[in-house]
Image 1 (tube, rainbow, N blue to C red):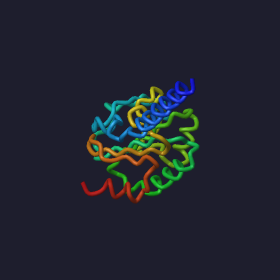
Image 2: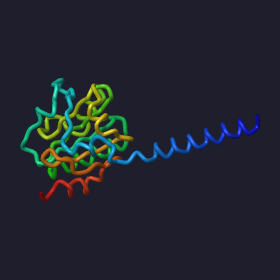
Image 3: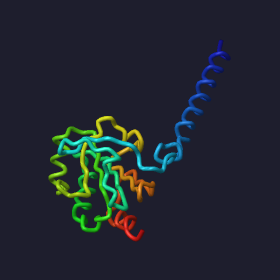
Image 4: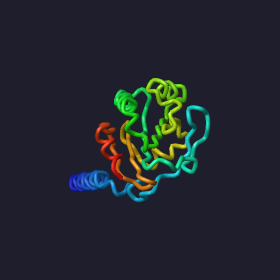
Length: 171
């Protein structure tokens, strides 16, 4: 009886170890945005109530920057404040701010950081969660940068604005 119990405990231990290693072995290359380097399909409701899809995006911006955020996240607020303060350096960047939160909170956020009415800012809610499913952020803000529709880089914990400026200049 003792040997059966010890055998079962050993088997459970081995399975647990392999399961843990399999979870840890989830390399970034398995993420959808690493497999498909093209800008993802999406649909979001903007703060003015319009449905916006990837097909509706203006073509006159070299870069598209997707920011998955929460209006009540202090890091997101810092990111928004810094981007707003440096908006003149982002004339070649289309920003898509996507949140899962309630639309009234998203609108207040957009107003607070002076994003409303700026042609290169789209702020809204992706009710189908297509962008979060594609990028699989672990925290907010999550920032993904594309150049002419092709993947450039992600910052899983937000990006320092000087680095974003550096990555969106010169091409």
